[in-house]
Length: 324
Ligand SMILES: Cc1cc2nc3c(=O)[nH]c(=O)nc-3n(C[C@H](O)[C@H](O)[C@H](O)COP(=O)(O)OP(=O)(O)OC[C@H]3O[C@@H](n4cnc5c(N)ncnc54)[C@H](O)[C@@H]3O)c2cc1C
Picture 1 (cartoon, protein in one colour):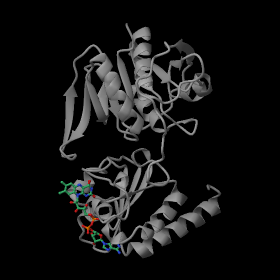
Picture 2 (picture 1 turned 90 degrees about the horizontal axis):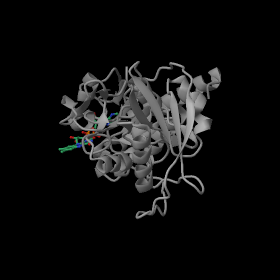
Picture 3 (picture 1 turned 180 degrees about the vertical axis):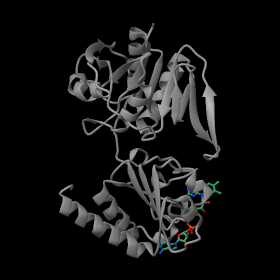
Picture 4 (picture 1 turned 120 degrees about the horizontal axis):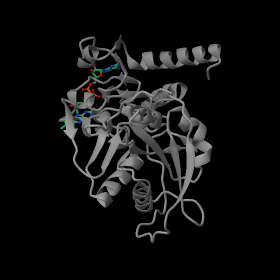
């Protein structure tokens, strides 16, 4: 049997593999597939234990002399295309993250390959992928046709499960490309803390937050939980927080394990951006607010009382259990 070679573009944060990669690897695993982790930070060996624990058979350490590769979407896309061609990889998956959104379309364009971003499922046998469309009202199954396939996967949508194997680390040298695009500076976004689209827990505030300052109670709670802070469009339009924090149809699509909506009514446009969350909790003074019918846990109360209480309780529990 000829094994399909599946390339996985691995993303990092602070020198560690982002957790969302492991869900993608788990879903790509099958007895018909050979998984190739494509590493561009030059430290392929350092990730061997973690990647082989999830069933990656080949770790391709992509290097360029002299020195290590720094983030440049043009050079990264050429490096990946070169690597795919060298190893005969015809399917590439990566995260629909800020980096993935910049990189994967360039690779698809370079290969003249079909591209689907924000997939929530895929099948490499019949080359179909599933993704939500029309504000999440439709789950489309899309059949792809091409010599290559490039897929961006929604972060955190796929569960990670270990399946240990023995991985081989292979160094692959790429040519010294002439850069037409120069990355001069990488700036942290306006939002504080954890990246919204990749967060495992999100606590969001709506119009009743009333000011930028009041969002501090959400940041405090988020810090204790290791969460990101999001917002409804009403809070963004009122100027309390930047648009990069907006969740919904015209903002970010998120898929955390836990989403806590504070003072958010649950309009369809907001729901479109967070409906695939694992667990939804809501804090609202109105027991009949639409969000109360759509959430797993609803707390009827004033967010300015409930959120600080939640922060206090969480701190106490974490201190007691030494989990902090
Ligand atoms: C084309 C289009 C695109 C849109 N895209 C988006 C989008 O991407 N994201 C998005 O969010 N919206 C989007 N909207 C707007 C959306 O329709 C809603 O208007 C918006 O989500 C409402 O925000 P909200 O729930 O914060 O505010 P409100 O509608 O004002 O609701 C506030 C809620 O907070 C409750 N509340 C009030 N005070 C308190 C308190 N002290 N404690 C607890 N609860 C309290 C109220 O009972 C109410 O349920 C879009 C609209 C359109 C037309």
